[in-house]
Length: 394
Image 1 (cartoon, helix red, strand yellow):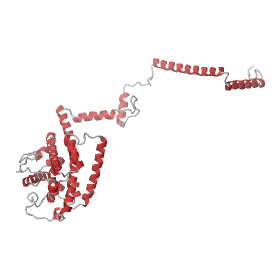
Image 2 (cartoon, rainbow, N blue to C red):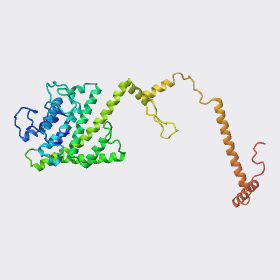
Image 3 (spheres, rainbow, N blue to C red):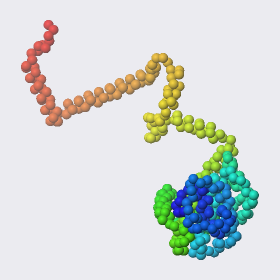
Image 4 (cartoon, rainbow, N blue to C red):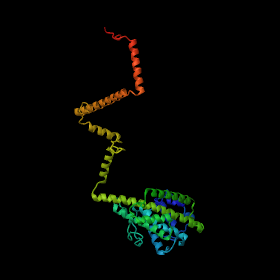
């Protein structure tokens, strides 16, 4: 099975089950299938049939827990080991905690499945479930408090996965800084809450480029057992880097859901009906006009549906008179006419004053020439037209 196909539908439990079977079938044959049934490398890497029934996610989670207990019992990793000290065939077992977090967050642990009769015990750091306890109870419908506990358990598993890689020196420098910055802040908030917008944007761009490069590398990677150790180690390190990037996304998903659940719990404690409040808020949004762009100016348009506009019009016309009502009172109209009269008189006075000033300016040649031309025209008119010739009424 190719790595990109393995991670493409990690939420699909057939692929998760197949991934767990690929992680180690030889060392832990009792976890997957029949004991002692040998498989070739090609069979173990064969892509799962999409039409086959999906594996029970609760069973997958149990097997991951058992695998984790077995790994801790064997002491495969020392606290002083670096990534270069880890054997190539054991690198893939570092992903077990990451897979456990993915299965918990996906919510599939809450599906119906036969309750286990026995379950290995865990250390306090590995899981919050008691021995023999069915973690599906944390997924009861409508039980937000228990879902909150499951999300915190998934976050804890993911933190331990990243912290183990950090202590081993398996994280890239930028990933190590991001994880340390995330651990400094409250884990219930966004991982980059203290960054400004430009830093967030640059980080997203860099992460996108890394994801694209990793996807291209994983598309050509091969994890067959018959490869030489150097190629196998390089390919497994690519898978590990891809899991680190997906872990950061998982942190963001968990933080967002924790915030939503915490808000819902606060509303339930206060006795507020969320559905009723949402309906009232939507009604206010639907009926309110769009605020004006310029402060102090009224909005000149509204985005309302036709039924809302029609309802408002009918409400405003219920007690309307049958005739057209005046738009001004007598006092208001009198003030408007007085203001218009004052403005008109002021314009006339200004025009007359400008004309008189122009006539009195005898030193201006243009004014004197105009007066001379006017006098000549008047003389010509009186010479050519007899006095009283225009009077036709005699």
